Length: 121
Image 1 (cartoon, rainbow, N blue to C red):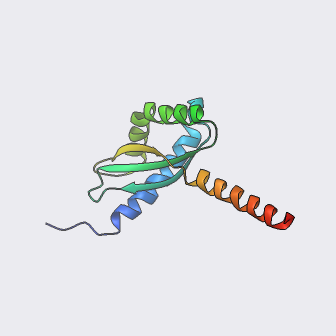
Image 2: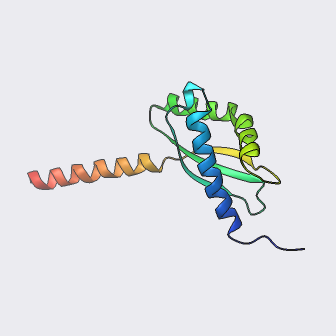
Image 3: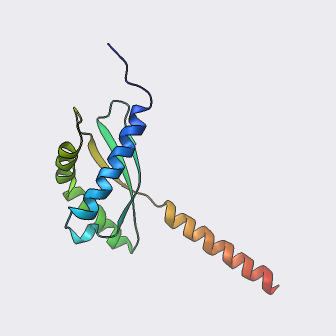
């Protein structure tokens, strides 16, 4: 039995990210999903699970609503992936909130404050 190449999960992740981004932009009509940005996709070695990291700008309620919208669209998105890609098995999708952009913005704010306080000293 042949082993899957090591790069296959990476290639599959890139393909899933591209296809999901297109589907979210054009096919998903849920208004809660309007400001969602895909920041990354990680696929398990066997290709059966995909962790989809998303960034949502807004309040905590808007972020929770966006995740709920993605969860409700999960079946539709898997069906869309099955039709758009020729995969033996479409991975189970798991959506996760990515707070990396928020952390980067907070760090930039703190650095700007330090710079202003140094300049005024």
